[in-house]
Image (cartoon, rainbow, N blue to C red; front, side, top):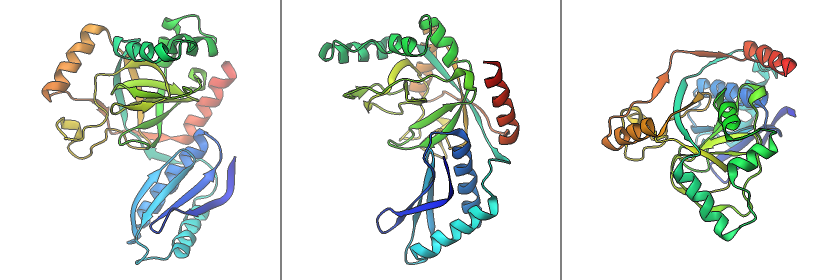
Length: 287
């Protein structure tokens, strides 16, 4: 549900959490990005950073330059000027991510977990069962058959939360309970209705279905596409997963190791939410 007005909560002395709704919903998320862009364009001297999330965003600010109450009032006024509807457009890059589905590295990770928790159904089979898919091939086709919206970044530097833009390609899965203590860097998983790409080796709980050899976080900024940022994705980007075979996977992996790999990034596009919502409604009607 989208709230009638933003809800503000202090995040310590130097941050404000701004909540716009309580659902994992594309429309709410787009309004989050639209409001963040408008607040950024207002160029408040006190604001140090803006961090979009799924249904909220965080403001990092200098309280010596603007009081908490004053900043909340300014953001409320900007939100009122925008209106509550999800309309308009935002710049949106399209980034292609190569994926080796059901690869050896994530399969080994799943097998290692099942040595302790033998009752755990292997991740691809569990996802297939829960979504009425006949086999792994059907899962691969469905997962790679849509663009994804970068709804939020967080939890770990470069970690993205991706929502499928085609409602007919929606896949759901529970998280591990208990979570894994290790997930390979580059693993691709599904948790709830979200897909994520693990930017580094971390604990995790998403169901693993594949692996990308292409970096999405480069702390040393070795690769050309990370010269301006340690993280590949920005909120509001779109992601397309493209299946690759083991030979192409190994070739990309070697180019990443050599520091010469370039991501396929289309950076001249604009995303129209009005046209998208009309298209998504038509997709749902055909389902």
